[in-house]
Amino acid sequence: MKIALIGYGKMGKMIEQIALSRGHEIVCVIDIDNQEDFDSDAFASADVAIEFTSPTAAYGNYLKAFAKNVKVVSGSTGWMAEHGDDVRRLCTEGGQTLFWASNFSIGVAIFSAVNRYLARIMNDFPQYDVDMEETHHVHKLDAPSGTAITLAEEIVERLDRKQKWVKGTLLAPDGTTTGTYSHSADEIPVNSIRRDEVPGIHTIRYDSDADSIVITHDAHSRKGFALGAVLAAEYTAKHQGLLTTSDLFKF
Image 1 (cartoon, helix red, strand yellow):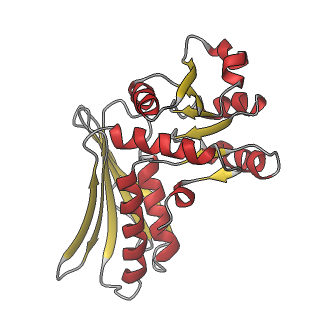
Image 2 (cartoon, rainbow, N blue to C red; image 1 turned 180 degrees about the horizontal axis):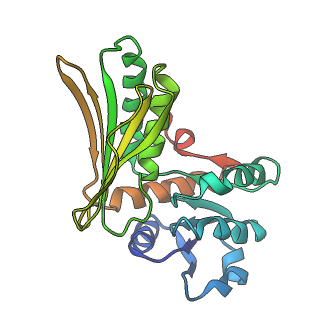
C-alpha cells in the first residue's frame, strides 16, 4: 500500500516506522514547510494519507487530499464542531473517504466497548453518579481530549439520566486550575490535566455513597496509537465513506 503522511511530528515518525515494518511504502511526507507537495504526483499516487496535525490545520488538509481523490485517515481532534457537517457531506454525497477517530489505540477501542457496556448497566442503578478525568502531555492544545469527548458522548447516549457532558476543571502545567467542579445532575463533568509527556490517561468513575467503580486506560507510549492508525489505513484502502473504529473493530 502507498501511504502519504501529513504531519511529521512524533506520531508521524512512529507511523512511518510501523508502516514500513508492515511492508507499506511511504510515497510522500508533508509537513508545515512543504505544503506545495499536496499538488505533487507522489501525493496523488497514495492509496491513503494518514493525517496527524492540529485542530486548525486538519480540515484544510482533508480538503487538499480530497481534491486529489486521496483517502484520509486522521487522528486530529478539535475540528468537528465547526467543520463536521461539511466533512460528513463530502463523505456521504461527495464520494470522499475519511477514517476519523479521536484515538486509534486498540486498547482504547476495547476500553470504549467496556465503557458503553457499563453505561447501559448503570441505567438500572441511579445511585451512581459519573464523572471523567483525562491527563495528557503539556503540548496538547485541546481540552478535554477528543477521546474523552467520545467516551463521554458514548455514556450520554446510553445513560438516560445524563443529557450532556460539560468541561470541568483544567489543571495546567504551571499548577493553576481553571474551570469549575460544579455541574447539573444531568451533566457529566470532564476534568483535564496537562502534565509532563503523558501520552494519555482516561478515567471514568461511577461513585455512590456505598462504593466507587473506576475504569482507566493508561497509554504507555504512542506506539499503540500509531499501530492503530496503520491498521485503519489498511482498512480504509478497501472501503469508502465516513469510517471510524467501530467499523474496524467489531465489538
